[in-house]
Image (tube, rainbow, N blue to C red; front, side, top):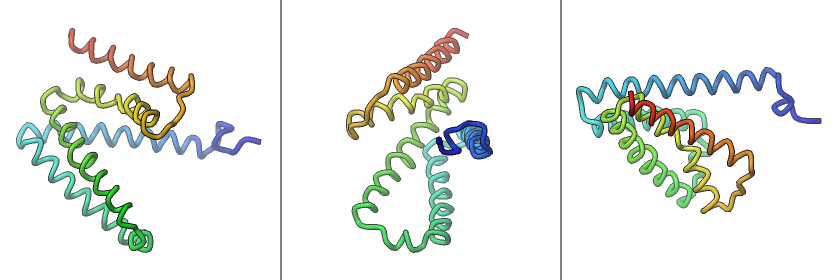
Length: 156
């Protein structure tokens, strides 16, 4: 018998959909605020403020709820976290915020949504993950949709 999460129709499935929609709304609101903020201050300043506040809040949550796991982090794991902090929290966030400032929300966010394509490529190249036909079709469909949106906006 399939687990509840695979049967469809369970309250867990619906809760996952609600969480996904709330996540999307949160990211959309974030880009809206970034667009407003970068009209008054540089994207680098917005990035540093955002990263600092996120870091403080995130560390506080980890220190409160995951204290034992925090103390058990190895030096290698800490190095990976530093790499994530640099690439995602600083570099990717700065580039994302700059793209929203220069291109606007409606043009930048569809391009930023090509993450599945690049994640799939990285997973295949560096982690030896397999690409199934459905995964390939889904990723290409998402990418094609984004390309169509961006091209249509360019003509508008």
